[in-house]
Length: 324
Image: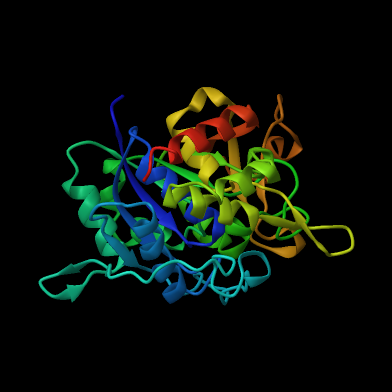
């Protein structure tokens, strides 16, 4: 298998951590670097979580850099009710000696790191965005020349059906809808791994518990992270979901045959009660908005609509079993 060169953009909470373990382990992924952004936790915590999870994965020297502390317009949101105050659900990992990337003794920010990696790559790079897309929007606006070095942006975000942050908006897009709109309208090829498939790939609770007794560090950490994956029940009580979450987007990268997708017009709603919604146009025929010129033609993205959930669970578990 030829490894795909990948840049990860993360807001490392519980499921980003699961994704980092997978990215380090899978032979089909060549992890070039990781950029961090505020989202599931504040930026300093995201950076620290990313570095400690790389240790848990036994990763080599992967450059990591911090980027945006907040969305382009809105203040940062609090996701501690999902990911805990530390972003990792209170899981205790050993302290790390890893540091963020430096050049000539100076710390390199996420936008500059991404620019340098993209321009230096001999082949186009896939950006896997598992967070609000603030870093990507800033990169594309400040350095449009990098577009030709991007194979595509595969992002975990959006929905063609229901939301989670609101009734219609998914968290990553809702956290910074202007940034997502910039990326979708940039002309760069995009792939949306949204809630339609995200909400289906789940590890049974007994399997998560069993992983915590593994002799392998990465499997034990993955088991703890998965066991922490909860949703909010009807009475607002925590309910185990076992979702691998963001890690599913990396499964989609290495095993696209596990999905049914369609290439469709997608735009982000930026106002009103539906702010942050990814409007996915699945109509067969033009509607009145098109007939009367009420909406400009929008770009298209490949949208994941159905998933072989067991296939991705098996893929995830077999991949992290490769780690020590």
